[in-house]
View 1 (spheres, protein in one colour):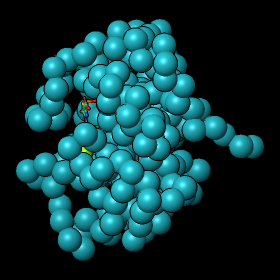
View 2 (tube, helix red, strand yellow):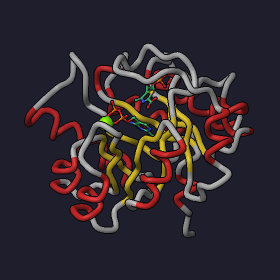
View 3 (spheres, rainbow, N blue to C red):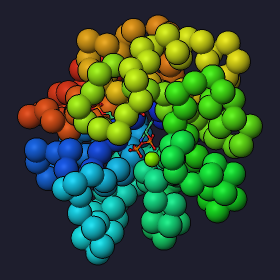
Length: 210
Ligand SMILES: Cc1ncc(COP(=O)(O)OP(=O)(O)O)c(N)n1
Ligand SMILES: Cc1nc(C(=O)O)sc1CCOP(=O)(O)O
Ligand SMILES: [Mg+2]
């Protein structure tokens, strides 16, 4: 069965070791069991791991994704994505230029963060496959963050953007429906799954709202 990118983006789990209460390998396995459809390796922040340990973790998590048919996306680090032959890369407005990344990664999946209509249009022109739009709601998971946008910004983007859009930032089970109602194809979450004592149940409850 061929699954479209839009379907894969339904429940997008973004996570690095510092986001987890338990071993990230266990968290990812459980999250996939619960219904996660795409995964982003985002190993950043004060307590992140580096070097060979980071590379080893990336490979372990990629293996778990491969075994379960879940695309494995790397946040920011295009070199790592190429080194381990990841399925794609996610970059933001402060990362490498979109067109450069597209040239390097070829046909791999390219996700781009957009906060305004202008950023969204430029990202599409320069080759983004999907957009991550946020923050939808207040979040404490990421500190260098833009002002809360609310799901309405996705509704506005929908008038001219046809590639898939996921909402991100402060999304939990109670907010999934509002994000989807405003035109998102999926939701991207960190803490709603990674901080749960049962990542499997957390993913299942999110997935049931989609
Ligand atoms: C799906 C998704 N959307 C947005 C982001 C944020 O990317 P960015 O603005 O580059 O911030 P960092 O995650 O790199 O801190 C994302 N990672 N994933
Ligand atoms: C990584 C990230 N990017 C955001 C953006 O707005 O672009 S918000 C965010 C953190 C999302 O974590 P949580 O689901 O725990 O709120
Ligand atoms: Mg980034």
